[in-house]
Length: 505
Image (cartoon, rainbow, N blue to C red):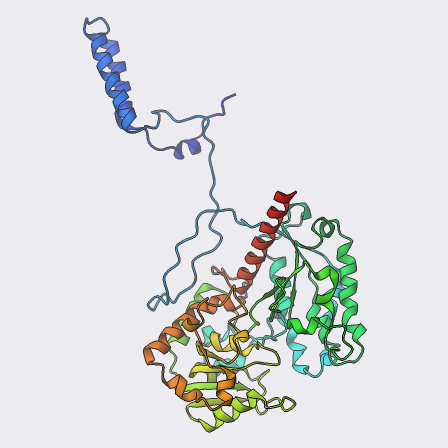
């Protein structure tokens, strides 16, 4: 049965080729008036030969609509191009608009509904159990984004300080959980899912016991969670390889070895069931492909593209009065502490260097002190933290300051999905051993011309959308942030692995 003709179907067809339609109409006219004329059929033959020649040159669309045509509806593109400052020259080549495609081309996510003991109950309203960092009490606020950083109003315009929050550096588990539950590619039908999200707050479950000698407590929640999830048929199908979770602490807090002398942390990531599970983590183990390093949460969470544009404009044009800055504190228990070397060096090079000594300032709460120092400096010194990475790397870049690294593993061997592939384009590297042997940081940085510094800063500013976590509540957030990049990346990876597994069967 031929489907009924609809106007929508007609609009999908090209307009008919005028030459062929004219020929057919002419034939009908001639036939009606001159069919009895002796030269009629010779004239008809001439017209059809002409039409045949035209058809060889260009294949026309029929004069009448194809009644079998079906109307097609094209979805809106998944995302818009990378944000640049519209009121300023482009910071990099403009990205072309993405092609029309399925809203979730890499598949959909099913989020397990775990018992609250594995997530909500771990977010303590009274966080004295999280000592020695009492400031972690703010981790529960605002789905992990933290309370508003209203003190920034003293030097930021009103429309900008409202995008800043007191975000805890270990709050990524809450932020990802909240975003995934509201994500457009989340499905409530596990049969249609490409990937399965485990909403387990491993960082909070382990963090509260890290300074206690009872190692079994650091593993208890982890073991109980795996017992729950391994019972699911969806786990058994691929042995957990299509599952992922988020861990808000560094990987080394979850790799306790069997050596009795190495008692730090949990053994969560050494457990057999975790061998194939992907995990977003703020610092990965280089040898473990299941670890996916993602940026530390900073305090900047714009709601819209316009908020982001305004911030990029500010950091590009901010009056930077210092050559470099250092934010940190010494580690007295570390032999020949490199951070202590930088702190003393920065103090001696004042005013070329701005120092924020976290032993004096409350760096966990005095966000305006840190932000103002970073905004005012061309470069920011980024040594190792308690491990190879630290949150200050991302605080520095969000402020448009060019990071100076002393270990390659701090950034160059991490965050491949988020940072530029060419380290020279956005940063400076000075080997830490050379600094210990007398290399002048000041001299290295002064060798860069103003144009070279601006070029690096432009690359940093271009990267900002990729290293922040937006706060899309209520606003039209038409740009991709670190969360989007991470989720799209793991979905694509799991999809490809499943397709390969199906091919080998």
